[in-house]
Length: 507
Image: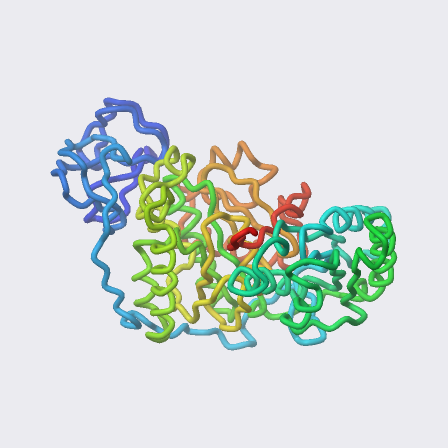
């Protein structure tokens, strides 16, 4: 069967999207137009004459305005689609529909690690943390000492990993930046996937060890130890002492065992990076379908990257459980608009070079696809960066669009899995919550088999539906949450992706 080279997303659209590279002069029978130039995969063409300043419609949603008169068959991209603000109707709660939750006995199950406080882990790591950058080398050396061979006697431990960062020193000792950093580190220390933790300090950080522990209500005990480098006599002694401390923690951490638990304990951070013109057609809506399934099973999905839902936030406020929840999302968007005023950043229209090459014209088009990761479930809560997520269902966390920073906030908030869609081939991974990577198109998936976990390009190829792919993603989520390594875990990606949001003025 001959497949139409272009995809129509809505009967009212005035553009369609190329499934693959389409040469100039190709007649598109379904649309009764002929391409006027070469059209790369993921890019759009006009299917009728569009007058200057007329809205460009994709998914029957405005993604910009024609910057000139265009004829049918013309490639539509950033050169002839102007970015412009839309009038927004937030319609708080008007589309809210309570989720039809499955009864507990009918919910899916996976092999998780049940902690003493009732939380459920998907992995079992020992972490070496720093309150400031001065002890980063010591943390790395301590963690590196625990090779696979040295951990062979502790088969239930997934690894000893360092969590280092560039903050904690040379910044103001109070305020948002410090609170955000402490909340992020504390979220990882307290994360269900962290079986035990060692926290290092030099001794003169603005983010002092004592203040950090007090702020995060952390108490030293069998699963939490601290060392101060200035008291131990320097780097070498701290490394040696740290190794001995972690050795003592290993038997306790190794007691973790997997058992059958409800899928309601899965909390997924939703990410997209290296997006292309297919992201909003395949991987993102398929992930959204999977998250709708997860939410029905009592689980939680965290949508983030505030700057990358700009222009589509009203779809979330309309589904909010309350007006207060919807307004909190709008407040965070307003903060970003003020914070980014006059700067050459995405929320002001421009997308990254990779996004642009993949067929995305501007932030409105990217937001249209990005918001689809959250599916159609109601919005149950809005959280600050790295704030503990307590609501079940679809929630939103305020984060930047930069993937490592955004995912770090989600994990600090409690995400025990990350699902990451990509069209250009992002090689992201994360620890202690593993990343499942979803490819938007088959050629990239086949080119990067060692990095990609799921091929959503079969939707573009016409051999799978969104519903079928959503079910496949959900089943893969259960398998990986049960301990099956993801591709990024298999090749050791994730230790360098702990990146707290550097919201700070350096002294």
